[in-house]
Each structure stands twice: as C-alpha cells, then as structure tokens.
Image (cartoon, rainbow, N blue to C red; front, side):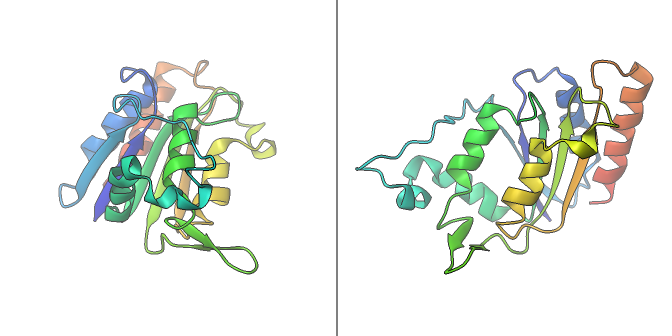
Length: 188
C-alpha cells in the first residue's frame, strides 16, 4: 500500500512529533510511505483567486501539482495534527483549501458533489486539550475533516483517533496513547 502521512505541527519535538515517529516506526516495511511535513515544507497556505486566476481553475495551479500528485499516488492518507480553538492549524486548512479543490478532489453535480478520491482510505490523528466528556458535543476539525471534506471527496473508510486533555494527562497516559497508535499502525 502507498501511504502519505500529512504532518502538521510547528515543533517536530512536540507530542504530535512523537505520534508521527510512532506511526512511521510501526507501519509495515511492505508499504511505500511518504511524509509531507507542511511546516518543514513551508507550505504556502494562502488561497488566491481573482479575475485572472479563477476559482474554477484551482485544480490546474502549477505550484500545487506536486501535492495533487502525492494525494493521487497515495492509497491511504494519514493526517496528524493538533486541534487549536476547535480548528486545525491554519497551514493545514490552507493545504485542504488549495489541494482538495473542485476538478481534482470533487466536482459539482446538478445536486450536490461527486467525490473523485475513490479507493483511498484515511486515518486522522488529533490531539487537543478538550475534556473527553465534552468531545461528543463539539464540532472540531478532526470531525470536519472526516465528515465534511474526506467523505465528500469519496475517501472511505476514515478512522478518527483523538487524544484529549493533552496538557493534563500523565506521561504514563501519553505512553499508553502512543502504544495504541503503534498498534493501529501495525495493522494498516
């Protein structure tokens, strides 16, 4: 399987960085794996269109070709990112805005949208400070990415793994979470 890991955290030494290492270490060597670190890449997250660059032509923007090629190449996408203020980091939102565009990831039908990323699956791993008992009642961008972006683009199935209360949990709980990540990665 071809796996693209999209890592989004400004500090590679963060807990999200430890999650990334755990995933990379525990994926089978039978897989072909590529990692896209949006911060290390200094990805330009600004979406631009005007009277000269039309929104309908975003699927043809030349500087996004390598990113579209990575998404096309992958059978499985793994997103690793923190939830800040109920949202994904701005750089990841910009990546979604610029890479998962009409004409590439989906198209418009008379009614609704048609996804073009059939045959791909995904795993979303998020960290945040929200208490676990509150999580079912809030709309965070892990859920948005799963249900309102990837699902619309025909990516299925999508697994969502969330670690809550990151700042308040013990080192032992962090290690348990990392081990659960390792177990999932070993079974991909």
